[in-house]
Amino acid sequence: MTRFVKQFAGALLLVLLALAHPATAQDLLPPAPYAYKQLEDPALEAKAQALMETLRCLKCQSQAISDSDAPMAGDMRHQVRTRIAAGEEPEAIRTWLVERYGDYVSYAPQNKPIMWPLFAAPLFILVMAALLLRGRFRRDPKDTGK
Amino acid sequence: MSEATAKRSSLAIWLPLALFGAFFVLVIWGLVRPADREVASAFIGKPLPQFALEAAAQDRPGLSTADFKTGKPKLLNVFASWCVPCAIEAPQMDALAKRGVEIHGVAIRDRSEDVARFLATNGNPFTRIGKDDVSEVQVGIGSSGVPETFVIDGKGVIRYQHIGEIRPEDVDLILRKLAEAGQ
Image (cartoon, helix red, strand yellow):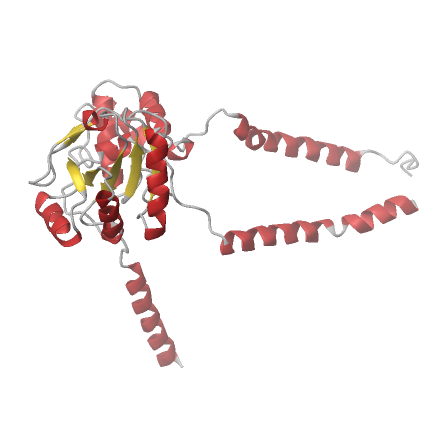
């Protein structure tokens, strides 16, 4: 029985390894200069890092460009760092990217009407809970406490 | 408890099950019809950014924004030698070039020798090919992968984006979009 389990686990591992092989081809070019190199000025690098953590990698869409080793994410980090080094403000760079890819590229929540239900939901739930509790705690007029 | 409230609460008892059912349907819906993962460019209708790329192949010149402002609509094809679907769309690109469509290529993160090998194997429909080593033009026009093909009008304004390889059935659509851009 245990041998069967071991064999099965081994086969499963092989299948998973085969599936894990990257399906997309990769380029052979070295990464962009500022893909993995920090800016010399720590203050500017901190600014760039904070921004990169809130920008979506378009190749690996659940990651930020700061987390991803996709070549395109590296190129986007290069883009962000060179722009920060040139004196651009992080929010200007975000706007520049949103102009090209839409809101999807940014993880930072925006103050747009479509977001209102999200912000209103907790308030709505609190009000509903208060009303419900009020009903529960209110004394029954027929109940004289005896 | 009056009769009316009793009736109401007997209905309310089904509410959690109904909510669960709705949630279940939502999950199944998401499983059978996964979301679209393509990111469309938000830059359609806007002029190409300023760029000047070096030549990616020996027998074709490099590419700059000015090459699109000649009064005639053209295609901008974002490709790479390491991209498998790019080879799949090559026959369609050749067919478009044979029908008189001018196609400019942007080779993403590619080495000249690899581009040369790719063109020798798959044919060369390009008039010019620029070398985009840091995905500068790709990000500049809101493209998020290879291959992608953009219709650019004679003034250098992006008019249409085709995501993924151009299949035989897409050729007519591309020709129509080019004609629209020429009006």
